[in-house]
Image (cartoon, rainbow, N blue to C red):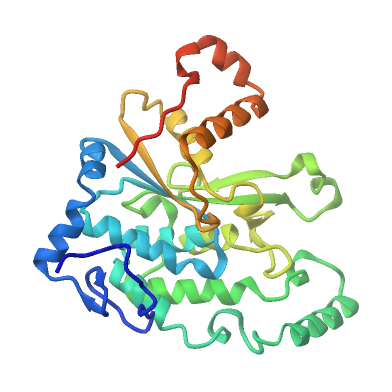
Length: 319
């Protein structure tokens, strides 16, 4: 019996850790069915042949296990990944994967979290109590970024470091990663009034080329510091918050770095995993309207369309 992706998947449970794709009924696919499953992606794999594959992982909070599923599918399809871009939850999964954790180990990490207290500290399920405690601290002490969050980012960062030490043996720096990863964060200044003006805030990336001496756990912490929920991350003299505030899905950053590397002759393909996608099916006309509106909003859209008039027609490829 072949694999049918249209069948009901309500039987699926995160308490299992499959080593292969699951078939209806809760069993893993055998060799023949697995080959049939892979065969469905043949046009996609043919399109990726001899191309550099870039992976962009979006933010998504506690939906981050979905990124592990995407990595598992790419692994089963034998799709080589040359570079990863991540924001918030995407920076967590992308950073751990780039450090050397396999997809099976990432699945085990997700399933082994028994309580939110492991990530956020004592009474993490009692936000009212945490808010009252924080209010008392802010009343008795001078207001600062270190006391502005409901939960401490240090706890989350310590947990990431323990994972890296357990599976990799150390906490690597960005420049030491064999698989390049770029974490997107939002720079909000030094905490002084003069540096906190809107014009001083900007997007910041942590990567092997831009920040080789920054520890991976620090880059992940800066990219996932949700405003209000977690305290901002301080690196050097500046503070950083969640990268989703400036770029939820880091496709633009991937394109900007491609331009900086001047890899115009390389055939690059970006696979984006957007955890904020609502499931809407966009037809060809919807894609054209979306691209047209983006070009109108872009400050260089009109010049681009005049210079490259033949590229104004956007096509969608169906697999």
